[in-house]
Length: 83
Image 1 (tube, rainbow, N blue to C red):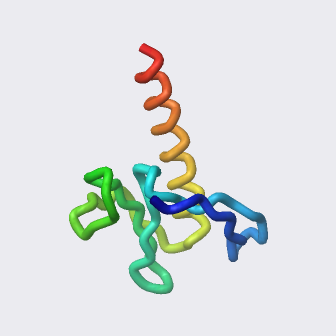
Image 2 (image 1 turned 90 degrees about the vertical axis):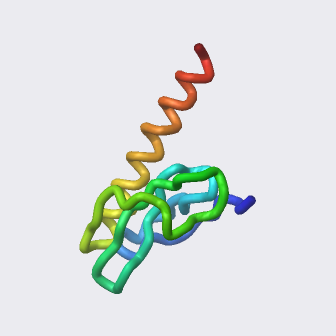
């Protein structure tokens, strides 16, 4: 299992949490100008079978969006566990 790590975001200069293996959604850089958000299909490693959710032409926008998606998913998971 990968540990969370702090990285400096190249676009904002702010420190942010990188996505980990626990996160359902992650950013994959396709080229220097194309970034896609993928949804992990299993609890294991990232694979080519993971569904593409959305594409972006800037890294900052992709990471901002993936942070929002993972935050919402964590909230849903927490609510589901409390039931």
